[in-house]
Amino acid sequence: MTALSALGGCGFQLRGRTELPFSRIALEGFAPHSPLAAEIRRALAQSAVVVASPAQAQVVLRALSDSRSRSVVASTTAGQVRELQLSVRLEFTLSTPSGRELIPATELVGSRDMSYSETQALGKEYEEAQLLRAMQSDIVGQLMRRLAHARPVTG
Image 1: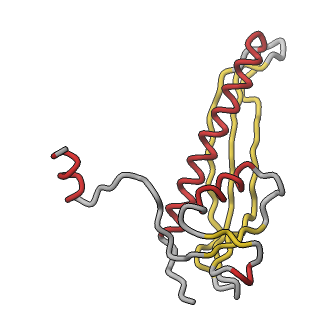
Image 2: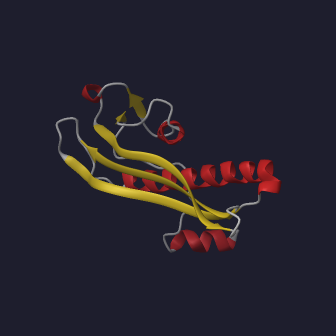
C-alpha cells in the first residue's frame, strides 16, 4: 500500500474514469453500425451525455475516417497466406457546434501482424477478432485522453 501512496505523490494515477471538460457531445461521420463508434459511445457515457444533434451539444466529435483493414504481408510460393496485417484507423476532429476547432484533424492508428494458417482458420478468425477488439479499445483510450485535454468549453 505504501508503494501506491508513493506513486500518488509523484503525479502517477491509475487509468480509470476520464474527466472531460464538457458534459454534452455529438458524434458525426461514423458509419451506422461502426463497432468503434459503439465503443466510443460506451466510453463517453461514463463522463458525458451523447446527444443526437450538434445543436444540443457543447462539442462535436466528427469522424473523418473510421476503418478497419486486413492485408496479406507474407505468402508461400503456392499462394497460401502466412501472415496478415490488421489495422484499425480513426481520423477525427473536435469542434464546437459553431465550428471553432478544439482538436484539429488527428489520426489514431493501431496495427498488428498476425501469422495465419489455413488449417487453423477458425482459431485464426477468433484471434483476428480479439486483435481488432484490442486495437479498437486502445484507440478509444487514446481518444478519451485527447478529449480530456481539449480546451474547456463554457456554456
